[in-house]
Image 1 (cartoon, rainbow over the protein chains, first blue to last red):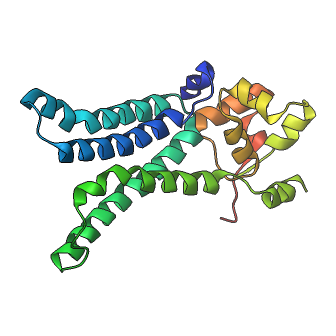
Image 2 (cartoon, each protein chain N blue to C red):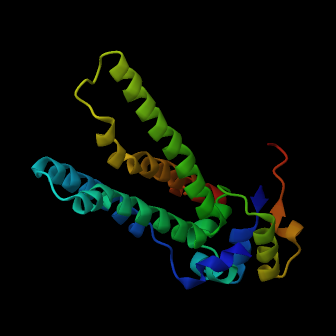
Image 3 (cartoon, each protein chain N blue to C red):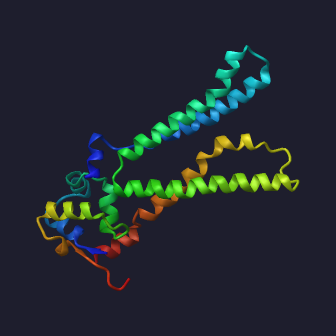
Length: 143
Length: 66
């Protein structure tokens, strides 16, 4: 049964949140480094790919997390992703069309990318809230 | 779906944490099933029945009003 996955300890979302934080920090660092000046080709290549390492770590952290979850926790993750992914797309499409219509002229779409984990975090909060019984519900059950 | 998980657990004086460990799920899952916020999968429902040594239909009852 899939529930054996929990035997190795309580799964934590911390590595995923750390990867999300790393993505934001690395993105800012790389932006500043690019503005600071020109460098040799291989260094520029490494600099450009640096934020991708955080995304890679995020993917590994999510996969590792999901494999260790039980069935309810997997449903919660699915609902978080089902909310987070389309919401991120919605934000991109909305910004893109607003820009095409002359709004948000100073915005760069690339600057929005590092904040993509936020819709997922919001989706996770909503899903956890949905499946976490309230005190009132518990009282009713015990009657 | 209605269930008697809380009653059966109380009879054995198990905490949600203890039952969760026996079932190999999180305490959050036991809590959600007891409060009818979540209906378990068939394999988990059978594991619950096996743990309490009761037929599955004695533990779970369809919510016909839904």
